[in-house]
Image (cartoon, rainbow, N blue to C red):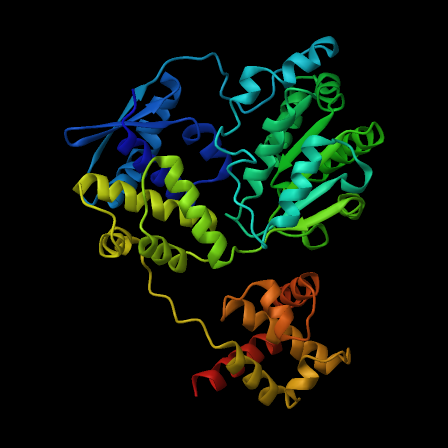
Length: 448
């Protein structure tokens, strides 16, 4: 039986290693592992098969050892132990079948194994930043195929709960409808394998007889023309048959480079819902929920410390909590802000203090020689619009403000307008030296 402390340490390690490995490698080699115990000077990791144990031992032992050592606070050796075989083929592909067995295939135990049992609607903490996306996800699970909510497209920056909602839909609906949850990368790999094995008909039968299709990280289809063409026809068939389609991405459809216009258009047929970084109240609620889930009591001052330290990424917020709880368990010490600070010190990087939003507004106004009223006004003249876009970019990058906050500062504009402005400047930086010079000059004014 796994040790609770080892499980928490390994959960934290997995969160950190996700940053350093590709998504396919993580899903193939790390996703189904588990922290078992601390045995003397070694940390024992449970793996599903001999093949995974051999691969991790030869290819990733160094990364795993360094990550565990940084969490525990001392050099640590890692051992990999097989937990037992369960028959899963480990390829990330849905099983092939004939048409008559589609329902059994899609809802089979091996398919459910991909889902994280913790990712349910009950465990998803709702706040102003994610309320619309959460409500739409619940509706998609309860009433698949409702026209105004189909397709449902959820986008946000990494670590804000897109995958949680997608898997919650799958777990709520898979008992009653034929469901498939895949990443765009898995869909691509399935398609390539089907072509290479001459099983295109089986591939299409498997994907085009669903009642609910959930695709994570849909932006990964970008620039894959052959896969996009197949997905286009899959989308058309499923949508015309009333299948509920739900996609997630790190940006809205119109801003995905390399995505065919016909797919982008179809992704915008239904409802587009975004998730913004959570406010302090929501971050505190998330921390309390995660603490209850782990069976620990987190003091209010410690929760406030963690909430203020991790403002823009829920995954990092949960990772910080896991690390602090594991650290307290290793030292058999109570949870305090001092202990939390010590536990997180190795992860602290030197970052400049976010700029003052009002100072940026004033500096932009001075640099472009326009008034603050013009900057936040309704004029769409080219000089004022360009100045406004640069200001949006600086407020986002240098102040780390949420899109909603930026919109309020610049004349109560909606978040889609802000996204457009920020993206326009982001794209121009590498192609227009004038834009990079403008940003540099305004930042110089701020430093003065």
